[in-house]
Amino acid sequence: MMTANTCIWDYQVLTSDQPGFGDACEIIARLFAEREREFGFSSEIARPFIATETVLSDPASALAPVIEGGRPMTILTTWSDLLTPVLEKAGFHFRPIDWPAGPFNCGVFSRDGSGQQTYVELVNEEAPEIAPSHVLIAKDANGFVGGTIATVREDAAWLSVMCVCPGSPAGTGTSIWNALADDLESRGIRRLDLGTQTAERFYSRCGMRVTDRLISRLRWRSAPEGIVWNDLVMMTIDL
Image: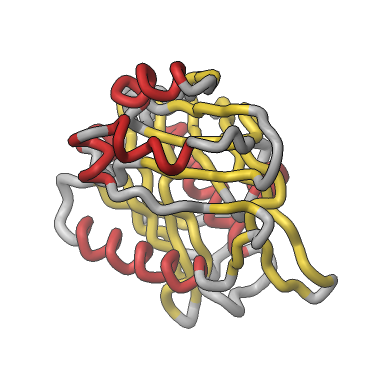
């Protein structure tokens, strides 16, 4: 247990070898799923579904109906090694995503074209290399207020989840971020990476920089000042 700069915050950090780690991950993941429902997707961007098992067994057949037609398209995947032969023939350009502690074979296939923009996500969330290994639970005087789930590998970390309970006081997210960064740095972690569809502004204020802007205006959220649009971006920070 460690205490942040203000006495109202308590943070419990657990690693995957400690009791209660799985329960802590479940609490944070459940909150994250609830907060995700606050965001909508742009109706101007098509998001076709492709069954993972179909892609793995026969990528050419699975992708054919989606990539035909020459529309502008972005495909984010953790199976770039499998999809490269099919997509390069279809005119896609590939750029890898460098996540030292993130999923292997991760990258972006993109193609210019005319018509509606299409976004496809083919990501293995259960990949063993990104199994959670670090969790932070944050509490104030009233109880649980949020936390983070990350994968730590050697001197790098990949942040898969960060969320804050609705109605939490202003500054809660920043306090959780500071606690996470301090703890990772104390463990010798020198770099933290993430991808986000909803929180670029927050992470930018925390000092992260965008390394790849995949899709503009992918998701939106209602706010007091009106509709707030969010891009799909990859971000990094040196700790």
